Image (cartoon, rainbow, N blue to C red; front, side, top):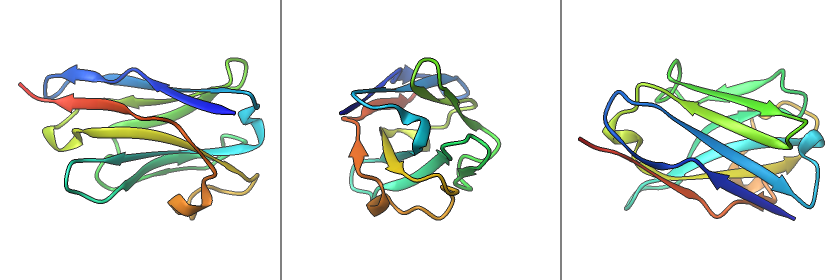
Length: 125
């Protein structure tokens, strides 16, 4: 069972990145997928999530209107499209899976049983 993030990198302010979270060893169909980030010296922050059915999503106020989460069941992958990136978005981004068919909006980090290794996003000129 594994989650692998990819798509991170260095981007200028105002730029875009799309992060991918690919699952192997299990199907994400019955899992809510969350995106978290942690910057140096700061606590882990919940960024976004998408329910197993894809109908419920959550975005932190800091990213609302700029980030979009989506899932591709055929590819067993969840994406986080990040637009209008700001230097304060710089962090290691993690995806995580929680076995639930309920809404993901109230799920805390402790509710996620599987985590990826993280991908670095750096927003700098």
